[in-house]
Image (cartoon, rainbow, N blue to C red):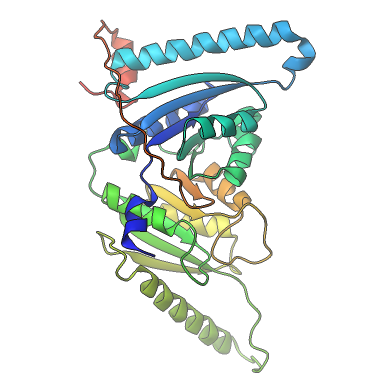
Length: 346
């Protein structure tokens, strides 16, 4: 893993937020704007008018819905411009009609998106339209990193704060070679000056057949040897990779508690600002160096921290910045209060 790969692993030049204008969209919007400003990225916002149900109602219903959504998008864009939240940020707002994920995927291709931001109501929310089952599908299929914010995530974006005490948690099953998402974790930690904590989930494995285990002490000895071996491999993995802050390591055994629970408990204990996970689009019987997307989505649904999932290496496509200047206009007191939560600068 070369230093040049790490340095450019997570450097989003174009960020897309998928929104359904629900309450669950507000926190992702704040985070996406803060990250776009931090990296100098192009900011894209998209809403897909799902054809589900509307097709039966007829073309008139679809057109009426698109018009209504287009007005909502225009009002949001106007508000963000007036409050200064988009000042100096190249941006584009889009409305599409069709199946949600295929349309989002096409937008990502057209706009060269290399970071997607979504929110979720959680698995058991009343609304599971865009930010429920579709959010999970996005985690499974997106070919760029996805930042997911669940219903329990913090309101304020850490990307836009002045705090110098940040902790990012990189959760990995740890297998041979570099775990998926490691370059992105290192790059993000260095960019935001965060301490990178590693959580290695050791899969449950059968005890060696060559030895008969008679006592609990024997089992504890075997587990301790496994823990030490894993710790050394993690130390080797992070040696000379250019981390600005000394990393720390945490090890859990998958047999003692659900993987999701281990990750959430560790993140809570460390007061993690971000959880980073390498995921694979298909389920495996055993954890290796990545998790299934269902585990990652479960973590996002219950985590206080945003969750960054990485399915594959990030694409790097440069987009020339042509930031739009915004005109000054009078703002109401309510506008000013809301703007503070959207990263507006004065």
